[in-house]
Length: 622
Image (cartoon, rainbow, N blue to C red; front, side, top):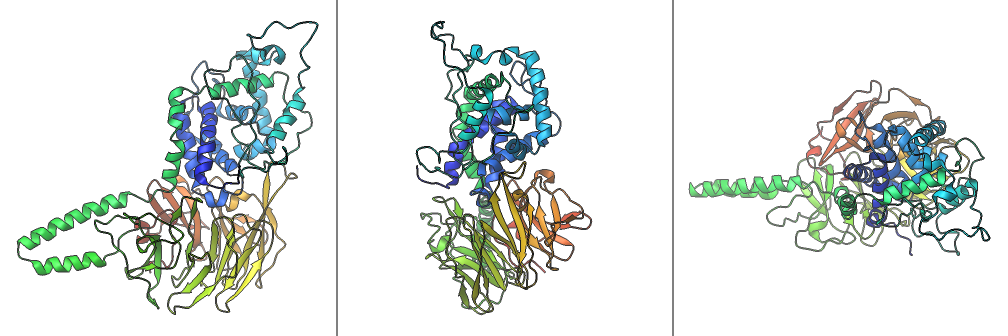
């Protein structure tokens, strides 16, 4: 199978597997679908950040985090089920270890539990399950025998069953993907080898053949640990087979709902705030009615003025006007700062994000309220690759970076009309763009590329930043860059990969320090002092880190209150306040957080009424 990074393929292939894990955790098909959908939506909205870095691990972290972080007791397993009576942490330890077949270091990474805590929970689970299901811990040779098989012939005994440590090693080897089998290469960055078929007589039938929920490929190459209290006990293969059978026997109603799971998640991930269309349609009908009344009263002059105002008034991104409206192309010079941008909408034309028609091109909304379209630029969502076409605005709204239909990355100075090219080759992945606050420097990184590029617009020169899986997170006004390099590891307990953060530039240069890769999934912003770095943790807390030493200081306020989801860290507003973009259902929230006190408040910028999940933000209101 050819390599594929398509979001829709990932959802279609692995969505049901996540739902079955959720089913074992919740014990209810409806709750499982709800939990799996929420975890997939939250993770896949960051698809550009996770697609080349074990996306299934990101979904698992979100799924187990939501399950373990739920307040109260929303996940009671129905009586009579195998895991009934187990506490949520104990249940999670059993599922991640025996159903998902993850080693303890890998399981600790996705659940957020320490290895020692997982060990304790597994011991507690065995004690409880021995009391409620003693047959799971009898001789596995008796349990795995099919009752329909003919009696064994004492003269010809069956082959000796592999011991538990060998079986565990086989499972670990299976997570390496298909690369080592027959010289084949891994089909995709998340492809896992199938898990062993359960042969226990209690496997629920009829049910689809259970396969490994995932093993991201290549999975972390973790050697099987030495024998210890957490290693597979003689009866544990039967426990794994029972869990696989229970997951495969998910109620038929739940399995039927899984058919549209991928479509549901993809629709929510790429939603374009349809509520605006309804609001605009309602307003348009009201305006038409007013015009008719005015005409009936003989106020033709008023109607003409209203019609002119309607033609000039800005329409929010994603709205569907009664008649197709195409803005004028960007003028040769535009001194008016751009506040935000959004891709246009074509009602009656097939969208081509790589060479859009005028109706589908980027629309730039300026501080005065005027709107202009950006010709000669890729725009919108490309379903073939799962990518959004890139556009970035400087914080003063005077410069923008975009990709033209030929694939070149250009930086356009709007007040002068000067365009300069970034001398970089586009990688096979979505572009990550950052710029210095004054717009002099623009940095370009790709999800699968080892090198990144930085353009100095003043001189027109491009500097290449080399390394392994490099991403430039932020750039200071003096050109100093915050650079992250990500590497797989087998030497750091509890981590399948680590990132190294360093400062690189004339202003400062450091050797770097190691951080958890999840710490940069929501981006980063460098303070005006060129030293303080704002980041968001895996549990949605804003932290301030010294970019030279890695030391975290100050409060760590939570950002996911009131069901808000963190999209990314936008910028520093002052020496003490950071701007963060959040999301709730169909609304974007721009929140300013005081890094000294931890207090937060809505920014109050009217751009929040129009910008969407990923629309670029430029100059703020004065």
